[in-house]
Length: 194
Image 1 (cartoon, rainbow, N blue to C red):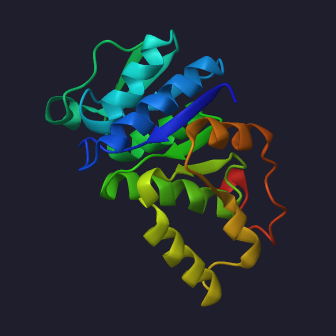
Image 2 (image 1 turned 90 degrees about the vertical axis):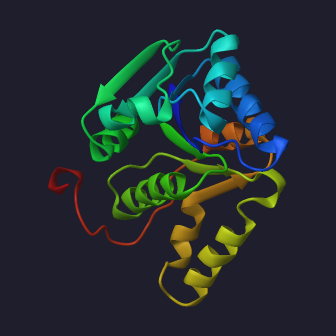
């Protein structure tokens, strides 16, 4: 992977372990020689992952909507900061720039980005790895829900493997590097139809 997109919170969360995990992920991405793509903010978990990658000499590209530049306090110390017109353009650009996706703990925005990315994988729009850093069991309730969705027939069994999960960021990145997209059932659309 040449660049890894990280979805995470613009808030720090309630545990110091979230910041620690973000720093470890940023360091691991930079040490692997990959670049980091993220939401461009200088606050919360977002700042921790970006600053850690920068401290290791890594490339960090932030992508932030113009309306959030002041609200999220855009990070102006990045390798590159791209200011775009909307959240939709932000997500599309982050996906285009990246070879894989990781979600750290976060809120509604993190979930939105994670599930859109998984949906794109499900539809065959991309075949890039998607992973979660499960810090302090943060993602366990979500994973239980995903398993329930599989049990209830809303997610096919073969698509549960689209989501990789590890508590250690370096281990997750290693799994993503060697990940091969599962052969899914018939695609609902072609890339040129999106």
